[in-house]
Image (tube, rainbow, N blue to C red; front, top):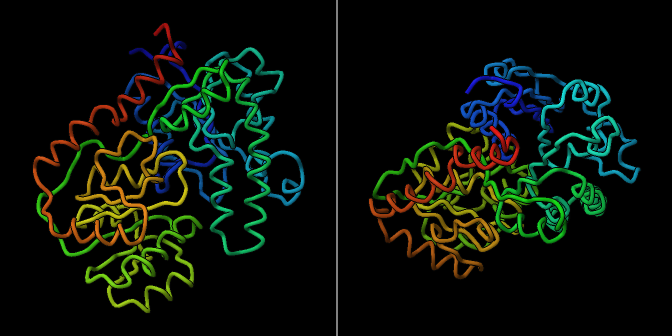
Length: 380
């Protein structure tokens, strides 16, 4: 496919998507790669926030531009969500207005420019990563710090109001079936398509057999993940004879203390993406409960592409289409039973083939890119 103007796309990212080392940024980086492989020339726009500029992105994009994110306290007190307030750049709008290429905004975070008069006649699509106000309310519900809890709760209310701006965009690419149903119902005049998360996995790669430990992994400085890990230590593995490994950066003191007090739990906090993937691959069970039913978790896809048995609760898989590949248990007691059952079962070649058949088609990055391109470039 020639790099004609018909195949150029502005992509606006809420942060710098390299290195691809957390959920939303993995989705963006792998999307960029998949779109490039499909023949699209990408003009990437990144807000800078806590990460250095990444020359590596030049290998995948025709142009890369960076913009300062305003992180001042003034953004906390207005009507706009804080995550949106700091990502409104006139420099970005002026650059976008120089041509007529379609625009893809990553997350509600970047949608503050949709109503700008300079972009009134543009094709602007939005990639939603969650129903954001539900996500923030979930964070508020499990946050112990009173100030953070107030921030999450306040931000949830602002995000719910601001979300109405999606009615002005050309289309929404939702990350899960459940999210697509929500947006379709709420914004009936805006086209909505389900495009599952883009991810680092190309092929299913799982070893038959088993091992002697279960794994929970995630960014432990996220309140939701910290909450899930503590519940696993104190309520699920507290009287089981099996070993649990918890892997992730920045665990809370409460989680560290809980792990120290447990004889069968090992906490690994100094881990990179490669080591996480290795642990996922080696574990007998990847156990991934969540108390927030939002979006689709990239760590779930990693576990299904690289890991053996996968035990989750309903919130983790609801509306994802992945239910048939997991054992679903919703209470500590039924999780205990599920863990005991799965440790008695080797992972078989038949189960690996079942994963391959489903994941390498409907959940491949190539498939996701094809859906997006069909809608963004209907005449290509």
